[in-house]
Length: 336
Picture 1 (tube, rainbow, N blue to C red):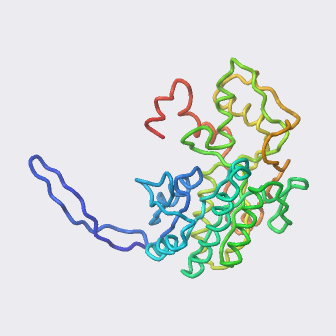
Picture 2: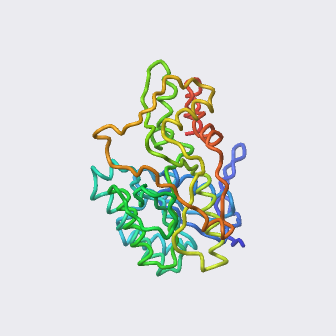
Picture 3: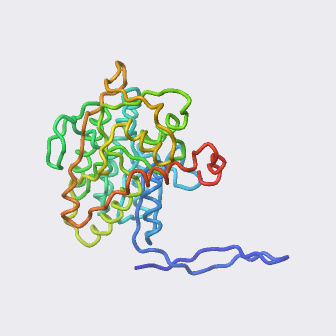
């Protein structure tokens, strides 16, 4: 269902400029995306925009000119945005998701991952808005996978602890919300270091020097476009069925270490991988502790008919990284 609104348009003809009013269709369904400037937020924004939703994206340091600048730590600002836009759905992607950064800048990370999430939960509950809170597989310790939604969390690092506390705050203030746990993400990056997956690209391309790559921790790289599609499907289902709430898991299906990801990236681009050396022991001082294998069991979504078949890793990573080929770096100015 669409509504009608008036839009101003400038019409140019030789020697004449005219300001015209046009009646335009405005999608009835409204969604607010936090962290719309980030890796996942950009994908979520595109997905809803391309499927007839009226969408408002917000960010902070990188928001303007495309998105609304909103400080999520400012409760009054958050309340005003929700009151003015009146979204049916909020997808909360904004977070400090880099474990080592959380260890170094703990207070700022906790404010964003916990307190801002609590504010969004309170305000969305007051407005009757469905909230999807993006969480992580790092709420688990990785000692006994796979993990279902009802398994007891036991995070090993401050990042996992902050996201777990964010989950609890969200569900405490808004019992009708959904928590969506996902593992390591990758997709169309603005810089290769925007994802723990695509950051391997430089090691793959620099084949003249040997490079050691972690071959210990088991990961399940997950394509942001697949997560974005799932968020839209969950939002559309919730508009029809208010019982959709609680904790959900979604993950890519291909199990890989970072070394295996790097080799797969090389294979996807027909590049050599013999210079990549598997590192089978975790070096001392390697930063925040990570779980060995925090595989997520995803049958709850599938049982609800909301399963999204993951895009094959080599296909998705090729789509994500081709602009960064040495002979195509000029394309970054076009696409990024």
